Length: 345
Image (cartoon, rainbow, N blue to C red):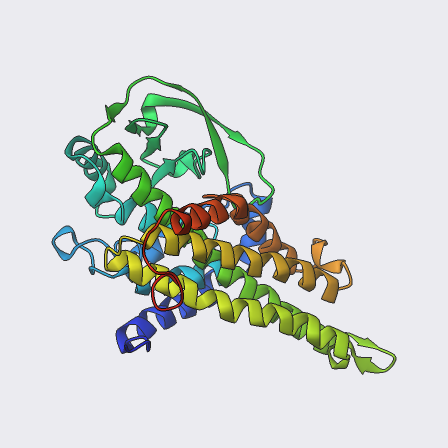
């Protein structure tokens, strides 16, 4: 099997990386915090022009028909940049889930969607507080038995506090009118849950890489006893441990993305494994990066805390480590198939 990314996949990843390096800087993120407006409409429009927001829609819907592996590579770069706008959510949870939705819900979405250009929020028991409702055209709400679409003007909501100022969270107080269906609910719920786990895994691996890169620069710049602290063996080992965790987590993300694109019956297992591995890598990156900064990393002056806040928030979204372990254990213990590297992992 060929595990090398295609030239087209590498080009897409490079394009989003170059765009975000210029458009989504730590200073622009801080500006959004100070203005209490992290959703940057200009940046969102530029992403539309770049073709990112409809990249994984079918070609007949105005998209590029991008597969989940390419999408995961792009979302990884969004995590690395700390992109506040819910582009990962729009592509992974809306674009990718539309084929599973009943006709009445799909029609309601598409009448507000503008081929992916208009933001649609999503709420789920594993991520109950939707993002940026003020900037949305509507909300897809999955509860325990129904899938609903609610237009923005048909609900009352309020903003709630978040550990990460880049993630503007909302609570739904009341719903005046909703399009509801219980058709294919289990299939919809399973599809959205798996994609939510994979999306957060890709974001977390990008965030982990960003934190270790910032820490590597810092330890070479700061001196102690006349030497950069990065020359000390203990500091090297601390950052190397994070690098190892990241390298072991990345293949799990790409395998899960490939599993989804191939409609593998084990895709839920693979997505849970990816989220578990990436959450561990991000957690260690947070811990060791702040230690490498001498606890200064969480202060306002340092950029590190921007990415730590987002990583801590994403770890709990779409199932924490305990939930992913339960999925992995329950799947493996209930199967009669052979287990091991050739079959399961």
